[in-house]
View (cartoon, rainbow, N blue to C red):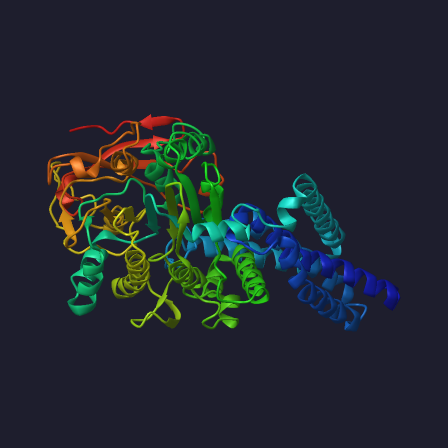
Length: 591
């Protein structure tokens, strides 16, 4: 009551700092560490951008405290302290699962009890602090200080353990010389393996069957065979990649990292080609480098998501992205909707124009154009080029003219088809340049996806399975994600684009490529060119709930095996298999 203005100012600065640190230091740091591969800008650079807002907020909170009457000041400190405690509770204890935040819609009406619980805790905490400030005020302040000290200690400890990881990004694929090599093809034989992430098979078919533009694209795919019935093993990228490279399927049988090391780092098509004398060029997204760096390679390049903006603009974009995630984490359930902002995000939208939105798609197509314009035939050894690009993946940001649509579009078929067509046109432009240089004919070309694009496939039947149940009727997205594109051109192949009805499967990929290349090795699966059309074959798809923790957790969420005997577009061909929990299998009862 008798504190001087100096002491009042000091206390206001202290409690204001505790509140702001939750918003602009501790929570962003925690999110960055848990999702480090999602960012190109270092955490130090982002925190440097946050410095001015941090100082400004602390000054504003302090100014309010200094201007308050001395009788009101103690209660103000208690409110600040309780706010910091509630921010910590929301960001660390009330962490609800919303799935992967990659542009998909969120059903906010679902699990609405979360919102009432969040509001109850926030409202109850603040009311308690105001009503009982005289009795428990000092305890609330001490608790806030203790939590602040704990968070600061944990942050400093984390930094001390791996400070270099936060001050600069990985050097995998960062050398300019690697990019120069990526441009160079061999005169003695090449493999061009393109993963068009999220490119759905039936959408590809619709594109190439579309009037004039579709015919032009189809005609450019000279010598290709399109495997219309190709099926994926997983609905997401991180376990599809080891299946593509090794033919092995993850079933929660061992820790995820051990499986990735065993497959991508062990017997894979890339490593077998490397051992056979091929130079391996990797051009992969920055946020997937942690997968691919386990492989043997000659040259590696991380395709950035900022090829068409300045470094400073991209730093700002990364800082806005991290702050949006921070606000999402710290907001009660009912407010998260306004932060997510129907896939647009609150802070990123304030900074958005064509430079900021959809950076991944536009940067990856820019990389394809740069590769096309820079191709040379200078290498003697045979080359295997593995390129992974986001050409038909959320978020959807293009219009029918392949320009920025002005906003993130809903993941509807028309938007996905536009973006996929624009991506395919860039691939075709690259292939046309290879024809001009005379290296198209002797190149094995694999154009495929890791999974589909979340939109209901055309031609899906409405029939019940042998047990009288249609397990995909109410969730056609399962089928969509199980329909990744697969089109392959063997060296020397020519003629119009052909369509195969063979029941191919993503784990067949390494066996197929090894057979084409003549490698003396065996992979699980079959060469897709040896599969008779429509011959009965059981294929398996493993469905599970996905979130960002799947990149770091030891095991995946429980996986439901779905067995498909026939066409994936025939709902009667689908039946439930086993359930795979970490290190154990729950057998499905057979009728």
